[in-house]
Structure formats: structure tokens, C-alpha cells
Image 1 (cartoon, chains in turn blue, purple):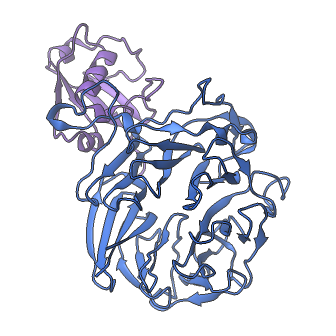
Image 2 (cartoon, each protein chain N blue to C red; image 1 turned 90 degrees about the horizontal axis):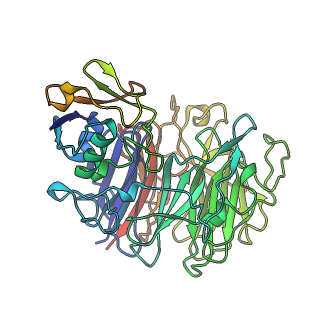
Length: 395
Length: 98
């Protein structure tokens, strides 16, 4: 019978939650990296035992962790060239934690400035890795979306990281600005059928696309309207919270923006609003059903000033029509006195026949629905605030 | 022989408990002590000093013999009591957050 493994990043460590295909009884492993912020954990589609984790701290900086055995053991993969692979006692080395913007003459771009909160220009400074996206085909290739916004890639299993500098340096960088959470590159979507096409999204710059494997990029924000920036229809500056795509339809994108749920049917060339009858179109997460490309999920949040669910009710909203018409999913979710948030990377779907949907809250609950959202159960209730949720469907 | 006390999260990262003991070649300075620390525990690279600038991370402080060495230059000689191993070099994380 198939199994699922839910990978949870929290403010104080990572947790791995495992169950069989019924998704009723769960084993909880963790905390891994106790006390550290784990922004994201994700498994390789090409080798499900290969996991990558972003471990970070305001005190001690960035650490990349890797597991080759499905999360039983972890290590830092980096080793400086020419040096022994391990330190005393077999300990791994620290090169894998090094993220340096590419300013080289050959492949890089000058490290210019971006817009700061107060409108002044501010130098680019690496802070942390928000999102790790392993390649569809090669376990050793993985992309990292970082703050301050840039895209890095490792082709050696996380040992070393190199910036795809065409994104940061393509020209609009000085107009990018941080959102409340920092100027983060939080979404990386690969087109499995066309490895040259990658979508990324940045708060608060917008969505971008490459069609040549990351060398050149262009903004894809036409149709977005953001009343909180000087030009609501500007080419860049939009606070995109998350973007989702069904693998069978790489031209169809769904976006949860700061406000507004949006849809594109042409690879981001243009967008239209599909917020429809949602109680609030502010939110962070958005995801697509594994088998129904027109079925999408969001969790509305009250407002940009009040980051919790409206009316004290935790409701996932599902549209089976690709947007505009939404139904609340409440069975098993608290419907009174609930004031949690669901952050942008904290929802995922499995690919079992009956699609499972998972999300984590800032209150430390991780909920699972084995029936595409019709009913929900908490896997765990009392973790640290959940930053990210991913799921692996295992044989 | 120099004794170094790491903050708890770095002890976890380095897979050590208690103090770390280092042999420092030549004159013992902040720089040479941290170089020796990172050579023995490479996973600490970048966690105490920035990978590129080698500057102390803002939320870390260096203390020894009841003195704050955080703002001394990298080649500041460590106190004799640290060099002799009588006193440890303390790496202390700022108290902030939860």
C-alpha cells in the first residue's frame, strides 16, 4: 500500500509525519534541528529518500541540511574543493551553507540595490533560504529561493550553490522591495515537460518566467492590480504570496496575491481575478488538486492588518471551476475562536487516488484531509508555528 | 591550548557538548582562534563570521576574562589567561526572541 510522508518546517525545528494510504494513523518524527527555524523541507521527485532542508537563524545564519535516507539521518553536504570530505570524527564541512551573489564578469551581474521599505535604495544582502525546489529528474540538482530575492542552483547535491544572476540583474531589480516578511523569493515552479521553463515569485516584486533554463527572465505581472503601490498596474512591485500549477497544464497558473486570487491561462503573460465569492481574497497559500486541474484551494485571511482567518473560523475554500465559485470546507476544522494564519508554503497535496490535502497553521496544527478537502483531521495540534508543509507520496 | 565555549545551538550543530579545546598555531588572536575552530568544526563556517566578509555576525558577541572583545580587531591578541587555558573564550548569542 502506498504511504505518505509530510515534511513540516516550523519556527523551532522540522517534523516528519508518516502514514499509510488511509492517512488515519500517523507517526511523528522530530523535532529535527531543534530550536532552529526550518523554512522549508522538500523531497526529490527523482529520489524520494533525498530530502533537503533550509535551517536558518537570525543569530547564526543559513545551514543547508540533506538526508539520503528519507529523513532518518541528516548532514551538511558541503565540502570545500581539495579539502578532506569530513572534519574530525567524520563531520561534514560547511561550504553548503555559502550563498554568495554572483558578481563575476562571466556569469554574474553587478550587485546593485533594491528599494527598501522607506523608498530608499538598499544593498542586496543574503539572509536566508525560503524555499528549496529539487529537480524533477536529478536528485543532485536543486533550486533555492533566497532573501534578499535571488535564485540559486546546486547541481552537486547541495554541496555548492551558484546564483542564476539573470533574474536579479535583468533590469527591474531596483524597483523590487521587501514585504513584511522580507524580500523573499518564495515560489519556484518547474515545467516538467520543458526544463527550460521555470516560474518564480518574489514578495514584493511579482512573478517572473524564464524560457531558457534561467539565463534570462522577464516579469509576468500584466493584469495584476495592487492598490498599495504607487502605480497599481506597475510591471513589478506586486506582493505575490504564492503561485501554484498543475503539472499537466504548465500554462495555467493560480496565484494568491497579497489581496486577490488570480489566474493565468497563458504562462503568466496575462492574469485575471478569480476571487469570486470568497469572504476575503487576502491570503497566503494556494494549491491545485493532484488529479483535477480546475480544483484549487485557498485559505482566506481577514486582511493585511489582521493575519488570521475571518470570523474566528478556519475554513479552506475549494473551487472546482478554476476560481470564481468557491465552497467552504469546514468539517473537522475549528469554527469558533480560531485566529491562526496559514503561511504561503504551508499547504500541499499528495497524489494518491483520493487526493490528500495538508496544511499547517501558525498555531502549530497540521491538518490532513484524505478526501480532497471534504473532511479534515489534525495530525498534530501543538507544534511550533508552522512555516511550511510538503508531502511525498511513496510506493 | 585554547578553550572555547559555544552557544547551545552551535554546540548542537558541531555535535559537541561542553567546551571545545583547540590548538592554535602562532600568536593566539580572535582570528586565529576562530580559524582553528572552523578548521576543526567546518560546519560552523558562516555561523560565527560572515562567509565572505569574515565579520562577526551581528547577534554574536565575544567575551573573555570578563572583557568584551566583540569590537576588537580580528588580530587582537587573546588575554594570557585564555592562551594558557585558564579561562575560556566565550561566544555568546544575543538574548532576544523566544
